[in-house]
Amino acid sequence: MTHTIAVAARQVDISFGSEEAKVIALNHTDFSAHTGELIMLVGPSGCGKTTLLSVIAGTLTPQSGEIEVFGQRLDGLSQEELTTFRRKNLGFVFQSFNLIPTLSVVENVMIPLLIQGASHAVAKKKATEILEKVGLKGREEGKPNALSGGQQQRVAIARALVHEPPLLICDEPTSALDKDTGAQIMEMIRELSRAPNRCVVVVTHDFRIFKYADRIAEMEDGKIKRVVDDPRTLDPTYL
Image 1 (spheres, rainbow, N blue to C red):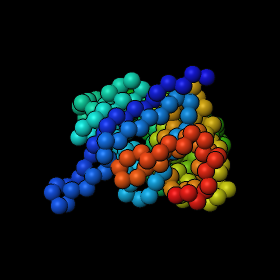
Image 2 (image 1 turned 45 degrees about the horizontal axis):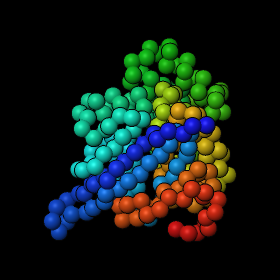
Image 3 (image 1 turned 90 degrees about the horizontal axis):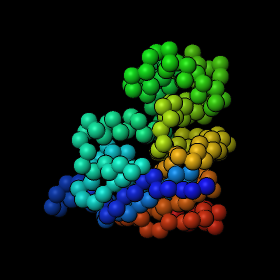
Image 4 (image 1 turned 135 degrees about the vertical axis):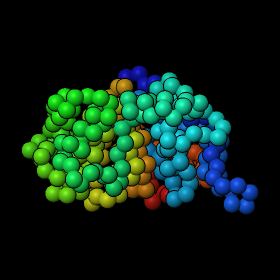
């Protein structure tokens, strides 16, 4: 399988505040991810992982440097252009699921399609199909709070994928789950990353799931400290 560069950050700088209160979040950061892979961003709190994720997602604009996602330079795009790009190309999975409790399971999953202008009928059909794929057939009309944590995360994954985005970004997807449920979720996410035109970026503190990564990028002080090409060689307590 040919892997092409899906995400490329080059010499990206971001800081917050000024003078004595200035905090450097990203410091000439370089990062790359490829199609057909699951890459994990790891490192201590405050090292810049979430900031880098926000740059990749186009929700933060670097003060200098370049960010390219699937051949599209994001730095320099207008907010409207960035919003359009995210709608078409990005799916997000959050640690807190971020489901809307007053909506049914299928209605939660329909949201990205409705935002893109799909009809209610088309959105419901696609949402129902992907819920079946993630093992939630028969749960479509229930409310999220009637589901287990693992089932809610499956709904979140279905919502992130229903519009078939090439880039899936997962922020601590297993931190709210027990070991066995987290393993099931990571098996699913790893399988999703095998699509030839998809890239999955996972930010995590959970060393239990390192084995699911194709590569691990370790961050420290706003930079990529090292990239591990074979996570199976790692001591799980190395961080």
